[in-house]
Amino acid sequence: QAAQQNSYYQDQLARKRHQDQLAAQRAMRDEDLKRQEESQMRIEALRRQTAEYEANIRKETEKARAEAEARGRIEQERKNWDLHMQRSKLESNEFRVTVLEGIREAGSIIGQGFKDYITDTQKLTTTVGVLSAIALGVYTA
Image 1 (cartoon, one colour):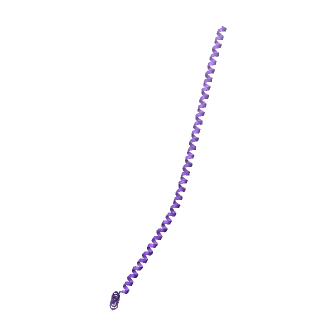
Image 2 (tube, rainbow, N blue to C red; image 1 turned 90 degrees about the vertical axis):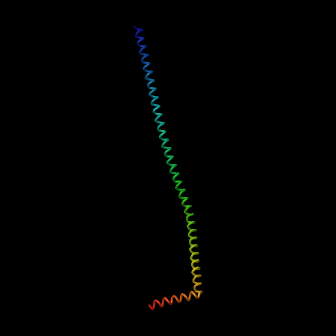
Image 3 (cartoon, rainbow, N blue to C red; image 1 turned 135 degrees about the horizontal axis):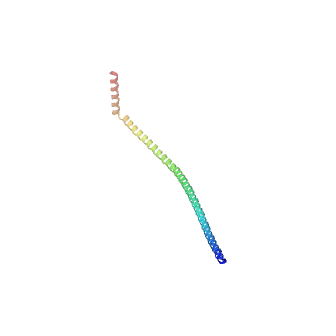
């Protein structure tokens, strides 16, 4: 009977050792699983932070690019404005010169025509006769 009790006791110890081993393995698996989940959560948090950081950098870069383009357009418009003003002044000067030359040309043509008319006695005589006839016709009628 002592051998049977010893055998039973040894069996109970073996079962308890086996259960303790299973419990330890289960605890280790749970701990590993917990560590893996925490690691995944940290990785996901880092991914989110990285995505937010990249989005912020992209936004700042886009803003800086837009500001630089706007400044460039403003500067270009200033330069173009100067060029437009110079061209406008040149065009107005050319127009003024053209108009003045046209007036001079018209004056010289009219003056030359009037001078030719005054110096031609036959034309003057004809004009005086026509005007006298018109006046005579108006006052006699």
